[in-house]
Image 1 (cartoon, rainbow, N blue to C red):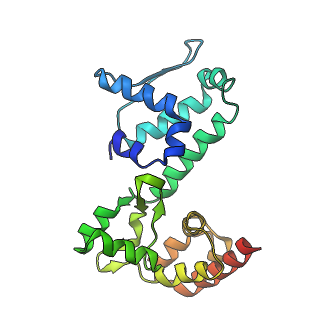
Image 2 (image 1 turned 135 degrees about the vertical axis):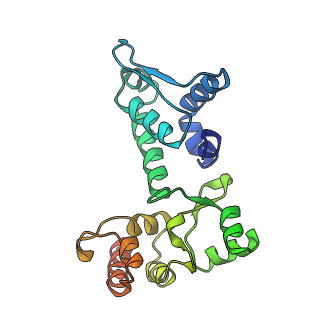
Length: 208
């Protein structure tokens, strides 16, 4: 996924919040250069490639650079916003790159509308990115269909009205109840019952 696709995966609110960086990145790429990050003291210079890993690295450099300190005078919450965008991208791309609705449709040989129905019915997990549509963590799609046990796990979380982004956070976070493994790893190992138990506990905690 290139930089344009990455930007399109942001909500409009996120895009507005980091617009100064997005515009900087786009401008440099349009001129045929690779982005360069340099601190205001000239002590740090970083040349990046125009790909997903580079954008993540781009944010990392901004978060620790002198440039950020200067820009935070205009927006004191800027660091939190940048970290939030980075965290969301990492969540979506856990294990491997997330898919768009059309990718899921092509994978199953169905319509985008059918994908939407599967998401709405809780069979698969899709995360809303506002006007940019939905993104689907790709680990949930396996050779013979949908990761076994996922739908039951999503149903257990939905019982206590756990929001979709919190569902994803649960699924990709190591849990001491699962010997430090993530629920996704357990489902991939065909260990459904402990995941369901953890999901119900997580749901109760989230609803409290």
